[in-house]
Image (cartoon, rainbow, N blue to C red; front, side, top):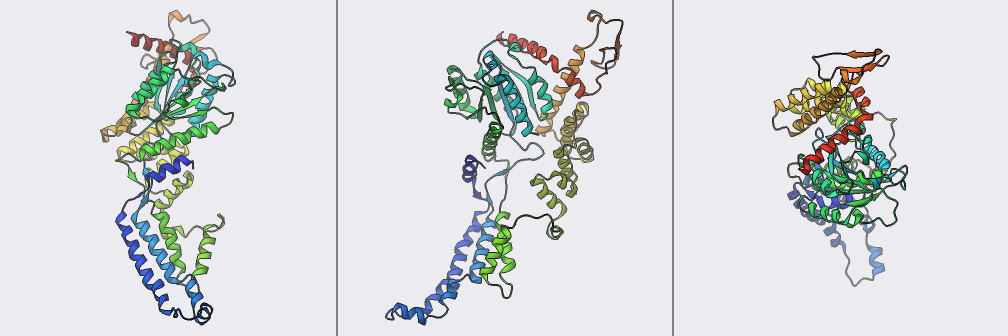
Length: 510
């Protein structure tokens, strides 16, 4: 855990039921009456020499030892603190998101083609984005490209496979004009995050920034206070006008290994947890159980006949520092915890396979399967549930398995069940956007007389379906799934983006 995260948790630390702390003075008073005060009755007169007083005193060593009253006082103090409900973090909705929404703003200009960061700055930035998406699996991410103008490439999505082909198509040649419109990219990123109910962050990947845009970013962020992060792709010893001088966000320099990726993730998580702690709608996570467990263990030992408190403390410490072993049976858990509670403990430990076997709650079991990547099983299990969140989970599982039409139906079902389910509405729009792109790509690949179909070509016609008239050379396989269609358009995303950016830039200049 980083220093920033520790400091942030220290700032958010408080008690949910602080009135229980009033029991601590009462416990201290009882301890004084039982343990401290009686010792004064046996104090010898001061006229006796100290060495003779020590020899005449009986049981002085016993009073210095750990006694049962000490353990009782310790247990009562721990229980009072546990009941007070110590907390330092909020509980996010696990079905909606377990990470911060992120908008990536990638600089796509001629300066990013410099080879000082091999193979060049832009290609290395693309590779790092893919590494970041892999480590943030399941988190919503949007992509913006900017040079002389800023354009949304992909809206917020949880599927890295949607972003990858568009990312590969980005090149300075697809941008309408050369420049460094980082301020415009900031405004566009803030617009995207305004649609989210959860706090998000903006990540700039660049090699430098102009003084005017630096001032614009600092000014534009004074109202929204959106967390900004900067990833610098340059080997210049003193990059001109780097974002580190902006006073907003943190700058991370590219590295040859994964240290920069992990640092970016830590920075994003720190700002997300800080923002989440300010969300009044999110519940605080009660951490009192962390204090109650030591009290329960002490309570097991103190009353045993023949056991002194000193040996109890040694046994307690030995139990804490004993290395874990998988050889012992874990049937004792059934005595104290329900299957769903055991499943939640496994889920919190990221043991999703074990959690999916333990959970009896269908929605929790389905979410464990979702985290395992078994999307079809998760979707089938979600489909049997009647809640809006279950329909949302079904849609998310289907969109992960690239069944976009079915996911649209599931998200629509979630909205019908709860019109206020903003997550379902957001994902419904995303699924429709993806399907629209796939259908548009199919239409662009439709055959016509002008395309010059040869005698050896095969034409498939289906007037009832949109974009299903496709031209195919003899011997080629017909793409039938959305995944296959996405792969066939990877080489054409550059042309697609170039046309779209040029049109958006023309509209913006009017």
